[in-house]
Image (cartoon, rainbow, N blue to C red; front, side):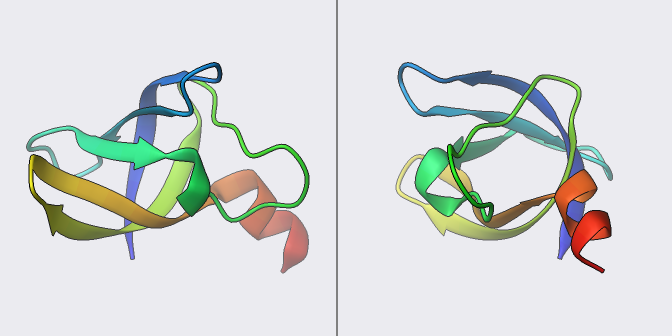
Length: 74
């Protein structure tokens, strides 16, 4: 899994972008791929781990795991 920081996330629209830690293009993030209980959302500046898949309009994040949630579960 890769790591990055949430650039922005729009709760009303259910998507946003992640800046990958290693640099490069921003990664599209959709709420349906966020791995957490309850309301699935991300906050700007939040650390996340994710897998990347090529989509029709660029890279998409899948299996997004907020780092704070991952550490709390471990």
